[in-house]
Amino acid sequence: MIQVIIIFIIIGLTVTVILLSPLITQKRRNHLKNRPFPPLWNSIIENNLPIYLYLSPVERRRLQGNIQVFLAEKQFIGCRGLQVTEEMKLTIASVACLLLLNQREKYFPKLRSILVYPSTYLVRETITIMLGNYVVEEKDNARLGESWSRDQLLLSWEQVQQDIYNWKDGHNVVLHEFAHQLDQEEGRTEGVPILKRSEDYRTWASVMTFEYQQLCDDVKQGKKTVMDEYGTTNPAEFFAVATETFFEKSLQLQSKHPALYELLQSYYQINTVEILNQR
Ligand SMILES: [Zn+2]
Image (cartoon, rainbow, N blue to C red; front, side, top):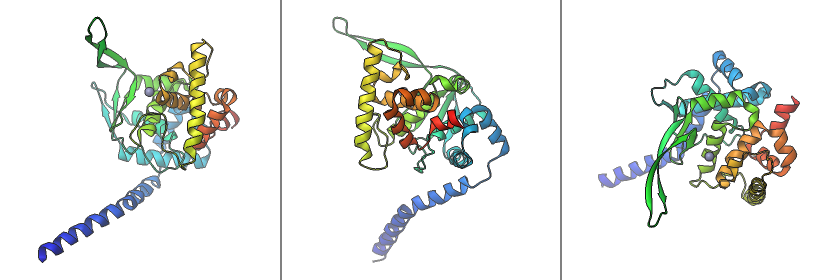
């Protein structure tokens, strides 16, 4: 009899913990968001995130809150002897959190650690080449960053710096890799992040398929494109490249691809044309 009561108590406690867990997380995050934002952090972000100066006070406060949560929940690991400084953490966190201004209250839930390399890093890849039978070859490939669907994201700090100093060139490794994180949230990497309403998926598929095909056609015909041709790799890379373009070359994207601009504006809940060109 006592054993049955103990089992019921354990089940009851487990259910209570499961039910209360999101509320506890929310409470903890609200507390983090409301903490005063250190002036030193503010000046680091002002120096390293060009778009920050153009955000409205409400957007800036929201970004600061997201950064506080991000820094409390994610671990930064320096690789190849790199000491991760406060400036590195804040720079990466502030660019990543730009993607979270849409108040979905999700902070890249699968991501636990950000591995920061001093510069380009090499990844050993095994390639099978068909020659007669086949030949397996090992090759070192240079990488600037990558997002793993499990729990890690890798970045080259040298590249992060280059990208923040060239904000308008449409290349940004942090925006790119964190867009992949949004895409990978539901388990697959296919260029479709989690959307608010079920009807949004149809619009997303129709706009993205058309724009992806158009980029592939334009690149094939050697035309000049607003988006980088790396976006033709597959729909997942297209979403990541479109995100970089949306934040860095917003006016060109809006004028050449208005439907895509509108889709991303609605998804990210931020009007980058107004922010970067009209304020
Ligand atoms: Zn990519």
